[in-house]
Length: 479
Ligand SMILES: [Zn+2]
Image 1 (tube, rainbow, N blue to C red):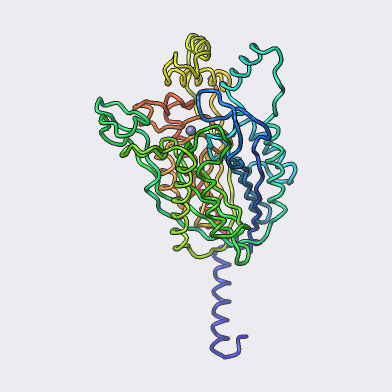
Image 2: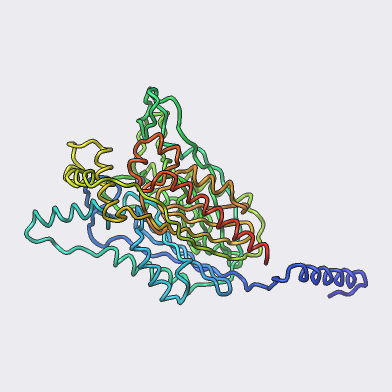
């Protein structure tokens, strides 16, 4: 192989260089290759079920397209991470705690690095929360006999364990490629400064009172491809755009369905396409500069196709493959919650009967539901927020946050991250409603009324996530 004297001396030089590098960095252990496994499972309720998304009761009448849970298992040496994204409005702390515990047991892995997230589909089942409890109690009081319905949380946990296990059984050596697409035509900050100086969310199309938009969007379309040989086994796409584009009473995964279809057409059916929702607490698809209707499957298809085209364009400039170095960390941050008096709680409880009617203003309905939820779930105690960071190499990392996080907070994490590309996913492991910025707490409007954390909670999460990213990056550099 090294036939000529010149080749031999080059080889000797290379060996010398390797030896010197090894001396300079004693932790030069050769890592086993990164393995990937991915799988998908149907999580559509098998019978009519209450639907999530709005402040009134609605029962499903069918399935437009099935809801799925999509799992990505990564393994290198002793470390295994699991990311499962569900076509659901959110996943609660109780549910994910149970699912993580069962998955960890089934796969004999550490539960710390298991993340269960939601896409925030408004056309999925409503299976928990204050309003469901209230509507069920009302139904029980009104009817002599209530038909037992599917225990959806139990059904879902079984499916999550199954899909994690299916993905783990498919582990294969992988290389990763990453890219960032750019998309500015489908997402809009939905908060506006109005002529009277107030800030309003969704003030309506062509509203002459609008002065200017109150915040930014995040145009990044983060893409990571996991390749096994010359095929793509899995793709992860991250974009900040709220999902309520479909409406109606049929189950649907909303616009990610069309993104997944386009990715399958481009990368092949063997590719498990996963969509991780970016920080979009104040972002939606409504363009107030025209008055065309923007609801239904056609709209979801338009948005999904546009997002897919941004992915395709991004992939034209894929960064070169790198040696994968999987690293992960998890931290629980105690975030203070809002506090209300006993009188306010009593009033809110009495107002629950008016939720879903026209007898109480929309924001009052939202606030009453929030106050009852705060009392039921937190009792004034800080919210234990789980933050997960997964580094795939010295270049790419994934941050997982709970709740519907304002886009400025996601942007702040990306800006301060030492990684070349940082994907920030929201609605991971818990769904404590909105996580606004301090600025938004001063401005008010819907997202602030429908938040549980106290002002400053979002910035606290950014600070912690950045610390975690810095230490993961440093650790990767030491290897
Ligand atoms: Zn929503």
